[in-house]
Image (cartoon, rainbow, N blue to C red; front, side, top):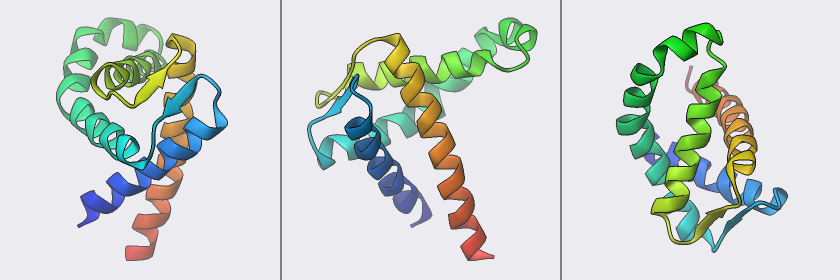
Length: 115
């Protein structure tokens, strides 16, 4: 149940960010849900592989390179989901950064309510 709630929250954030950012578009709520689902699958499968492969660069940049990995995950979701478009790496980077910030705040509030 918690996974579905987090998936829906992520989909809402995707819709809101696509309305705010001019370089990111979604066709509707269904495509936003598909984006949220693909992001969760990509973060589960692809992200650990990318983190391991880029570990030396991540260590040298003190973890900041993980933001680049997040942008790559967004571009992969753009490639997978037909109703989701990102106009380049810079918009993917900004989208990933804002998505991570808003998700962490909302998920922290969600977990705080359970305690």
